[in-house]
Length: 326
Image 1 (cartoon, rainbow, N blue to C red):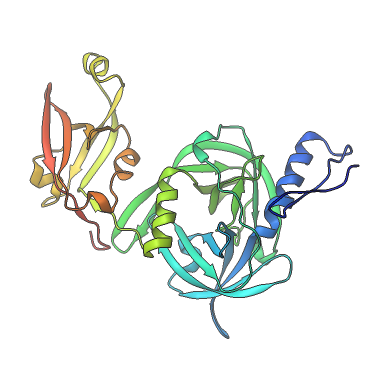
Image 2: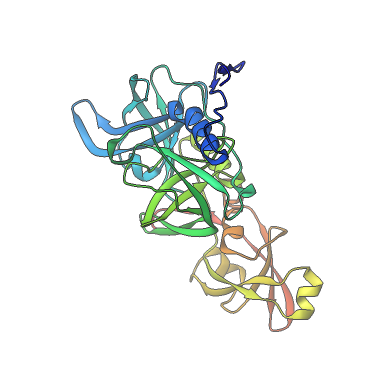
């Protein structure tokens, strides 16, 4: 057995152990990397706790911690406890219920940050490791595989219902308290934030990808995420062969409903239209439209192309800001 390796950033990498098989070596290495960086979060303040508990992942060197919006709920703070026995209060920086992500900041020393990975590179069957605080048991590690990709998770804020896109499904055992903890790949990079236990052997995690990185950055800088609203309900639909050849893809989005009085309605879109492009970007899933609906789209002209009764139709819509009552 070799000696532990100390990296320039101070992280200690355990030595290879010939007694461990390849699978065990990966899981133990990821566990050693992430356990110190995953906190147990207790929501509330002082002696009046809200009763909520969950997990959070340190992702910056200055104490920012990533968790679920449903973990923090309506609370403005609480306490974070780390596996080394240290604890400190935290305050809420920002929460986004429609992605089920939240950022809190710990008022005290924190471990070096975990490395955020890229969920778009995951493959079904790939090994993943979950680290969190299920049932109050800090530093708990479970392992499994990516069971499916591209799942949708309903998320609600007030009267607004959206879906979290590209959710990761895993069979790594998750229990209450795992929410907000890390789902990592074999390199120890955090590719998801565990968010739901959907059943025995069925856990879900919000992916770490370009869209969620944007949400996280906005929560840090602004404390909330502003979204644009078009007023469309859509479903993937196959394109006629001649149109598919022309646009270079097989699917568009058929409009099932256009909300009366919405920007889409005022722009002249109708149920039955098939969306092809929004803002110059090809769309074939509801998620591909949602990822365009951030603050920079509010109040700006947005070019939309649809297929209607055998013809291409171009319209201009001007999204408004999404509110909880929308």
